[in-house]
Image 1 (tube, rainbow over the protein chains, first blue to last red):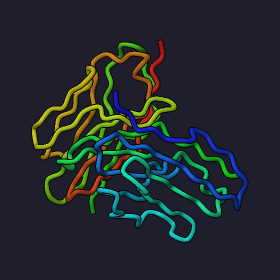
Image 2: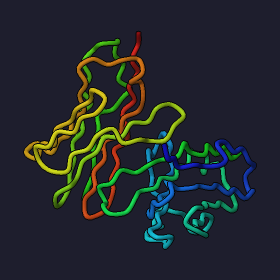
Image 3: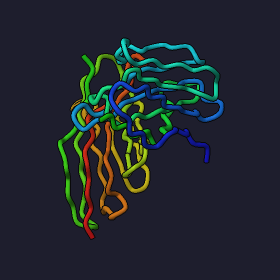
Image 4: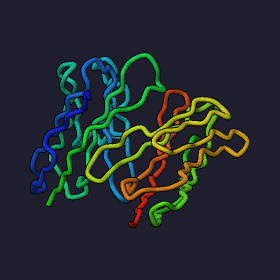
Length: 115
Length: 110
């Protein structure tokens, strides 16, 4: 089964440090999403890309978060500097082309703890 | 605006009990409706979907019917198992935008 792969699975860091999360979407999927999941807010869309171009990053705090797709096999989400309120599980998801009704395929997430 | 409202959890059931998780929506246009499931420590995965009114989505014994007149897409299963313990998310797509509910946690006890 093709899967979305996220690394690292867990990250503990001190506030002020840079954090980089990586995602390998399913080969051939042209849309990639970054979500943040917390108990209080549920699933929040941070950014998404189609054919590697950013289409919507309005959910992302621009002063400290950045998302890129350097190539079709890698998406990155970077936080600099990190803050305790960034502690959450970050999910990457990808979707194949053809239809907006196609299912999203999620990775298993990166659990970030900022102390 | 567009929104999805799910019943609050946690829901706790005994094995073989009947499950209903309510989901209602507000949407302009003609949304497609989805249920996703998140097992512990994993990402979400699609459980079932329905793309037009009166469609019934089904998978793994779960069912949900797209009811336009009541703007609902309630998830049901006739006999739950311990392995169904997870968080269930209702979602819709309208105007190419995906909107999520907050999720409902289900715990099934043996």
